Amino acid sequence: MYWIFTIITSAYLYLSAYTYFFSESTIRGVRELGFPDFFRIQLAILKLIAATIILIPGIPTHFKEWAYAGIGLFYITAITAHIAHKDPMIINIINIVLSGLLVASYVYFRKLSGLA
Image (tube, rainbow, N blue to C red):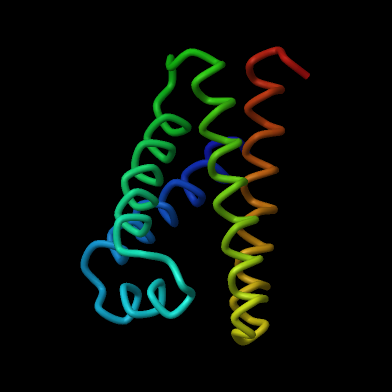
């Protein structure tokens, strides 16, 4: 189960980062939310790093813990921004589902690491 949730989470983060760099509609959407371009680029890079950290076995636990926290913070920020912007509810439903997948990945990570 850990790998299923973690691969889905990482795949979404890689795809999302890609769109932050190359999709004109995503770039425009991030601007419409009120975020500057440097923040969009920073988020894309952090998504790539976090997705890689949670995906690669053998990376020390404390790095993985920080990666999970960062991804969670991204989802919270995204939900808050989309609510404030009055975007369609489906966007937040997707973010909530993705948050649930992240939590499931984290719970299984803790179990596999002997931390739970």
